[in-house]
Image (cartoon, rainbow, N blue to C red; front, side, top):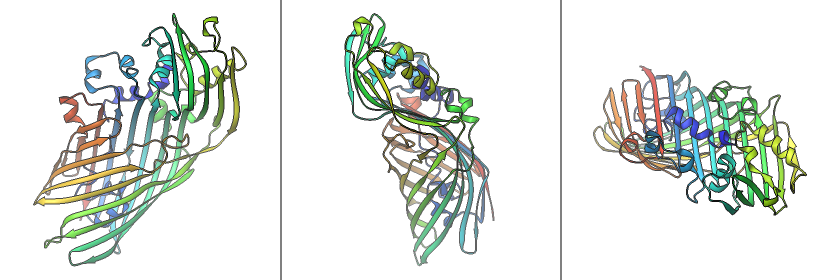
Length: 456
């Protein structure tokens, strides 16, 4: 199971980047189509009559175990990940924005955008269980350990594309006050998916001279897969080869913003709110499956070679391998692995979030933005794409051609990070964590880059 557990780490080490996409730039005072990704009402505030996004790319990797210096110094990452009693959390989130356009016409703001998403997550995995499955409990002393975890331990990967149609309009614009509202309709194109969930897990892991067994155990196990992630979970090519599937889902973003303007008709304060990703997509493929099993291991004598042999999982590649091993062990050595329900096609909910932000102009050309992302769905559900809660504070210096900003992020998984971003004309580049990565033991790394231009 090593390759699956380390899927997030593989992405993190390959990309060496990671947290909230385009942080600082998605709230730029030079409003473009990219801003509409955080709140569709921003299309009513377009800086130019036409805004063309040529491309934008962002990748975020965050975790609660491995620091940036550990990667640089070549530390044994497996030892670090499974050290201590805190459950393991990894989140790798990549977004690729294709050619997109926003424009103003007939008193409205409109937008057409295409995006591809790649997400790999490890959530709430018990360190002792993860160690036993990946390393034959090499980090553990000989003996036994009893685990009880009522939460759902999940390993997931999701790939999908979306095509967004957006519209916004001013609802009120008098004197120094303006109110806008907007909506986006997203057409979803699910690519591939994999989920391993183990809820209500309890059992005893015994390590006898490298013979690692699970006894007196019970758990609910969900195994779901579709597309290229069914057989292999860690090959980056499998993620990028299935960015767009067939049209099979819809989602909605709804947002509003308020502006208090000064004598020059530019806002002194802007406050916005949006609920994004309200919807789900259905995965359909020839190899589709979602199954829920009950796992019970009754035998309590590992010394005699009974119970579930965990060494079998050490070098597997995909969810089908896990499922086949458990099925093969059913009825032997006290192991009962019973199918409770299954279906071929299945729905997966998008990570519904609430975006709240406020941008205040302190003096001419200098402003500060407060941005919050709050998860609204249950992250423990097997049919839910994971997301993180985040708060950022971004001081910003803006002129006509230049913009510089320093996003300071507070993330529930990786903690506090600080980064740097720049815009020169329509080109922008930045990172939410570069400053803390080079100055401290940051557990997050990220990078974003893009180019756009405006007309009129």
